[in-house]
Length: 274
Image 1 (tube, rainbow, N blue to C red):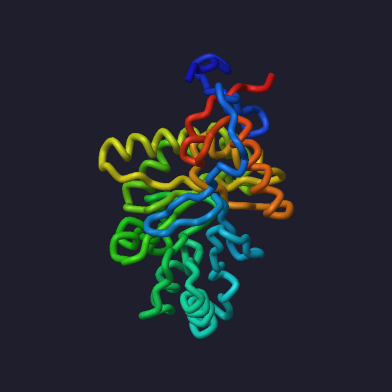
Image 2: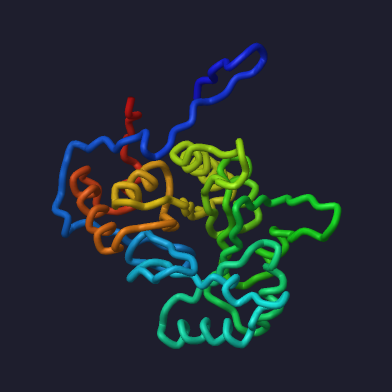
């Protein structure tokens, strides 16, 4: 991408948010009933490309238990958390748990022999190399590789940070900009596209495809569709209207643009809205 000089000796790239891009229809359209919205993370297939953490569940989505809701008095309520995981397992649903990086090892210890199907190590910003003078930071590479369950890690918003997360062995990475760090962040369309490029380099290096999950304030299915075209495999829903409306909108968008699957939609063309 072309660099823009912003002053003597300093240049920058132009970044784009999802509201600044639009999907270009292909040469064909198709019936919305023929559209397939499923996606796959490791061995698990979900009917819709949506992820929730600790909020209301969405039918067909990856619905993740937020372990922070079981944290009290400096420790996890292992009994209640284990019961919640077992309830999902007994129902035949995918059991997934999200935890902050600072508490990942405590969660693993608290669960003991109880293993969820998926673990999400999630923070405002998560890197493969955290430096601290006061405490021993989480060794993400060691943690990911010692677990027998797939791990999703993030958030990140740059090519380099995403590539390093992928090299830990993570099955998926989360894309988001940190809204709490003043002056720091990458517009979401650009961030997803950069992480997509990291995924392609990692795929070339290892033959392993890492899922990209973008954190998006969803208003309509069009927001989901644009995130997918930028490179996401699924969207972590920050806020959303009724999920059936979102999926219906997504199906119409895919049908209008002629794409049968979410994977095919990633190949769509984008234009920048002036």
